[in-house]
Structure formats: structure tokens, C-alpha cells
Length: 216
Image (cartoon, rainbow, N blue to C red; front, side):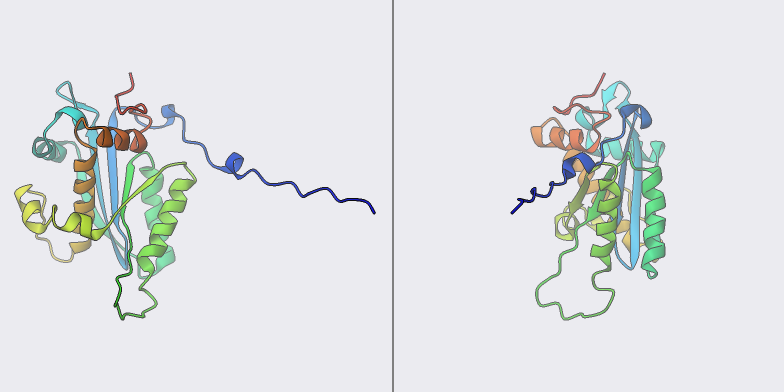
């Protein structure tokens, strides 16, 4: 009896997207884009120069000083109505297309034990996160997830007011939650410790080398 050949295994590593060439993304600008996904999705976008007054922005500047500078260089936030999830995903995708070189941060969805809600929208945040992660996977870009519990205490409303980052406009609580995630992540990547340097290298490989040092 003729023996059949074993089926060929597909090499999925070959199919994995490769990072964009550094020449295709801005080398002198640090961008951060954070999402608070849900029926109303908040977003927060900050752009900063790699150096300010000759100093490395993330390594040599104080956090409070940097926040004062951020208002000069660009920081905005807003909300997306995702009650129609497909349309909401399309809108999120448009933002990601424009800012795919940014560090992408999103709130991680965790279903709390004892939660009795059974609505069809309960898992909307996780579905949106899945699309965000897929969109970034296609560009070989990581998505940095943070839980609500990680950010609400260190970046509470009182702290936002101290930072002069709190807006009293009504109905923008989801945008403020996205601000919290952005600021918390910004604090994580600032400084000279090895953990911050590694996170910078992963978030902006077109700006920092594997050790977290600025590329020349």
C-alpha cells in the first residue's frame, strides 16, 4: 500500500506582519493614544517632541514639568458613540490608521465576579479591544493594556485637577478615563530605570533602541 506523505505544516511566523520601516513614521515625535472602550469609547491623544530644550523628554524631564509642556505641543481627547459597534469600530480604526506609530494604550476588560448583568452590550469593551489588538497586530505593533484598578487611585479626579488636566465639561467621563490611562502609562515610561527603558523600546522602536536609548 502506497504511503501518503504527511501534510505540510503552514509556517505562521512567515505570515506575521513585519514592523513598518522607520522612514515611514515620524522620528522626532512621541505620540500616545489611549482608549477607554465601551458603549461610549473615550480616547486621549498626546504628542510630544523627543527632546525638549535639549533634554530627553521621557528620561530627563520631571512629570509635572512635562505635563505643562504637553499643553503647548498637543493633547486632546474625545468620545466615540459605539452603540452601533461596527460603526464605532470603523471610527476607532480611522484614528488608529492616522496614529499607528503611537504607543497604543487601552483599558483591559475584566468581568468582575458576582456581576449579575446579562445585557448584550456587557462584552462590548472586550469586542472593541479585540479589534484594536487585531488592527495593531496587522502592523506588528503592541497594545498596552491597563486595568481600571491600576489607574483610578494614582490618577483620580483630584490628581487630574492638581495636574490641571481635569475638564468639568459634562458627559466626558469616558474621555477623562482615557486621560487617566494615558497619564498612568506616561508615568510608567518616564525615567532611567530598566523597566521604563524597555517599555519605551517596545512602544517606539523607531525612536529608541532595544536598551531604551534614543536612536541617532
